Image (cartoon, rainbow, N blue to C red; front, side):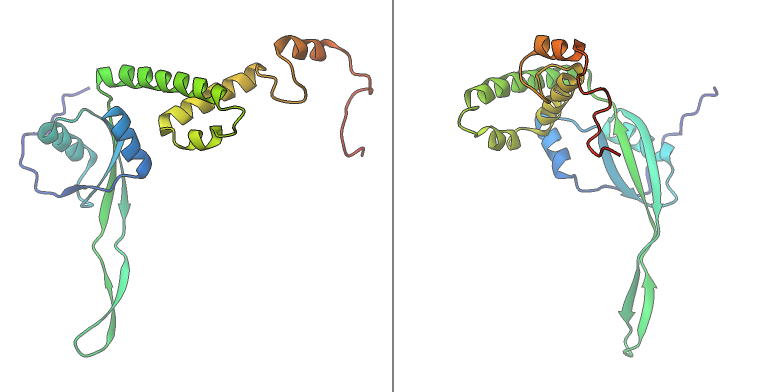
Length: 192
């Protein structure tokens, strides 16, 4: 592959970061970095220029840049003589920049997430009788909620937890699965 480095240049195009979503703000508070950031720029700017600007000026470790072009909106305006005219705003390009995580951020985030999941599990067991667990779950950080959902999905897929059609643990479920069915097979509710 040939060596392709853009020459050093002074950027003559605007690159404005778009507002962050609430989930992104929460992730930024928790981990200190974002995986994806969106920018608004001119349509003539390409992906290499965006990546090189972010690397050289801001020192960001850019992994990938995805872009999409938008046409300017049409607006109806009134001129000085009182006539209505259609005017089009300028076209623009949206750039989604994927950043590489810092080497220590992933380990720190995983450790914090594991601690929060363990603390939440202990608090949930303590609050099981009072019914306050759902309200506490809503206050958890987004990353911890995702980790808990992944933990629950793993338990449901593995058959642990006795979640459907009967109580008991893994041994009782295994015995139910090994016993032959007495109703003769299918068990459809419709009967047709």
